[in-house]
Length: 454
Ligand code: NAP
Ligand code: MG
Image (cartoon, rainbow, N blue to C red; front, side):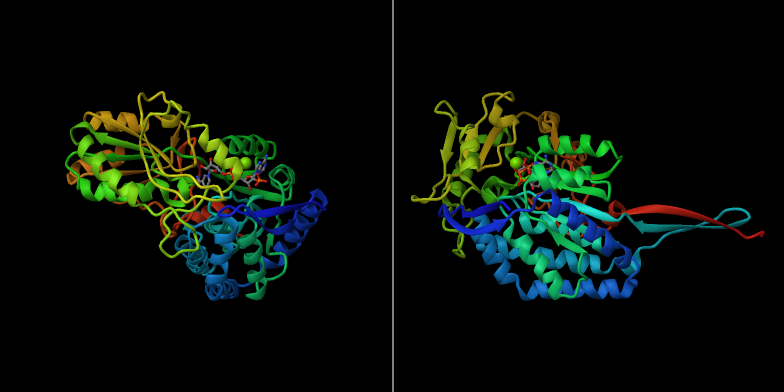
């Protein structure tokens, strides 16, 4: 069996050897999940709800342990990692209410009764990226098992540690054997098998747009259900009438959080020209103050990049000729550290302005008026998220309706609440996760007509 050595990105030191599943192990786990589905779907709604609440409680009792694992494995700041573990608990609690509320409808028809049922799909394959290992896992497995499905989950090769622990905690919470299975392994082996194996009835994929397109093509062969959460190049639009102080103070966190390895990163800042200088002055102060330091410190606001490979990929966007306005700071020593970097876009054709960098790099571009701001924001193949800063409520409404993106925040940078829907327009994805409707993505609607004349 092959193994993978987890590296602590803050120190470049090895942490742990992880056994990687091969094809035979993957198939055996899928078969086990299929077997478990036969009984899990029949567990009474109240019992399924109780087990999900137990799982949430056990996760809650291990928040600190999970958070520390994520700091070691992923270099997330301890503050973020605690939030991420808490998010798994919250998502489990939220969907623990679902089994008892998976309502169908009774639809008026002549000569009988018509009822719809929300039936589980079967085995769901969840493929998780390395940037938010815990939350993204939870957004897939919690609603999936709540709806009566069983799950095979593949963490990213780089970041398997918290997923493996969550699998153990599920068992500790009494989730029956085979209902939630974590399979560490390569995307090209384990992930690909979720696509090709006919027993896996749906794939939930979060990751790069390129890999997502391949998965979509693969799923077509079996008309396999699919949810995609892909890349982004979201705009942070700042109008002259905004609270510029507040917009500038919030901008670093909106793009440099998680070292910019966030699909919702506001990596394009569009500023109305009349306030460009005033914004840049205040933004520079905020970027210089942004604390890039050891992620285990409570004060840390940004840790390292995930890997040497990611560091090299991000650096490609920063050649000597890059139009750097200013940078923040970074610690010296080992690890994959990069200072937050602010670029002035020279044109909308700049690679750094157009492409998802997935690192702590942001491009700033001025705009003239409202129409120009919307046009620039939408000039992207992506459409995941975005922010609008303005004190004019009419404008905020118009622009938030005009921007082609799934998650917009006005006068703030929040994107993800577990009780509201999350997902992308255009090449940022397909379908929505979280919120009240997520169960629809994990069930088939069955319509049954009962003839009352016979
Ligand atoms: P990635 O290379 O697409 O990998 C994502 C996951 O897919 C990993 O578990 C990976 O396994 C697996 N995988 C790779 N090739 C596969 C294949 N042929 N078949 C099945 N699975 C395969 O992306 P990443 O490098 O982890 O993450 C960065 C990207 O993800 C960025 O573009 C980012 O925007 C996007 N992302 C989007 C969202 C969102 O919600 N929209 C959230 C997070 C990340 P290995 O680990 O073995 O490669
Ligand atoms: Mg990859």
